[in-house]
Length: 263
Length: 263
Image 1 (cartoon, helix red, strand yellow):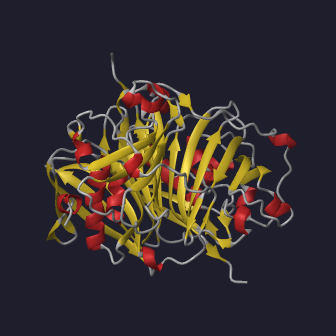
Image 2: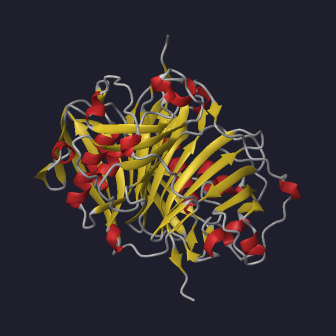
Image 3: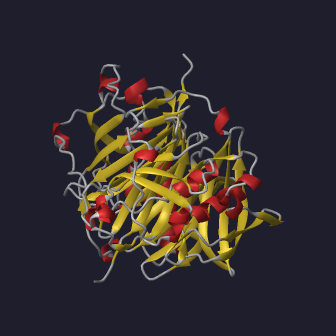
């Protein structure tokens, strides 16, 4: 079992009540990464629902989490033949921290047309990409990243103005990604606004929605995370995720607030 | 008071309990438009929360709604200085139909940088655009539309393959849009997949998230609704909405299922 699977494991405490533990290794500053927290909700949903794969998962981040136990209370909302719905409330010390709503399905049973308006972007392979400079970010010990564009702001302190980071991400222990891992990887790249304003400070997530499309093949995930519109400090971050076989496996969008660092 | 305001009005029934009525005029086939239903949730949230403007609103559509009363049970989740959170469960005849989670704020009090990666697309003015052919869609009696691209599939039966509809939308009675109206307009354009496969049939929404950025100026809204990735019948629809003053007022994304019509 890989580190991610171990550190997102849940135990059942009661009826639709599960407990996970926010572990060291996943923090950005003092706060566990929002995608990592979402993955624990994803496990609780999988345990509670008749369908086992996330189709669409939406999380609202009410208050920052901290290390330690996190209680997941699942409420089933409805279930049909192909899709079931539930919400999860995540508590620490009795305080509601994160609220998740989800539709789950069996991805392998989806039937229908497949179409794409754009080809997958062609990136140099993982092995050809240089690791970003070590910024002492604990989270990078778990979600290892290679950038193919946008890296200038980290390497040379010069934002390229693009509003996008492109590159690769994988579990640092080499474990293969699964659909629950996609929920974490959907929040694993740095805020694209850094490519415009530099590493501006703190960009807390208000809400994150992940659409999962397929079980990823083994290997690193190809990622494009981009922002296009910032309005008075409110910004969206749109992510696209392909597996090593070239298949689109997820898309994501979050609402974040850009808190400029006071220099 | 305009038709939209009247037909999304709610009355308070009890503590955090509100009732609206799904009115004739807003249906697509037999089912009230999902954005219209969301707008009623938006009114209940506004009534219950200390902050009055939607910042991010996410709805899961569990079961189709019908005409008549709809009960909105609001649960407050948390509140900070600038943002408050709540969920709404929407019931008809005791059945949970729609589940909404939201962050509300005071849009006029947002402070921070504004930036855009792209310029607003330039469309011919509303008056220069031809109304689409009447398809007998009841909803078009309320949300009047002009298309500037993608219309060939309706006008000549030939999909242009773009995956996007661009154009304008407004309340048909000429009422000016407000932030609650944006929740409805975020589901007011036809499915962009029609520009690829033709009017394929039924494209039910699983989940719809709207990010509101500003109070719209009077006049029609400029809209671009696009899809890029359909995976075995699961598709996203991404919307961008500008007001008549050229200001981005909202973005939206939904997860939908594409049910091909059996010919």
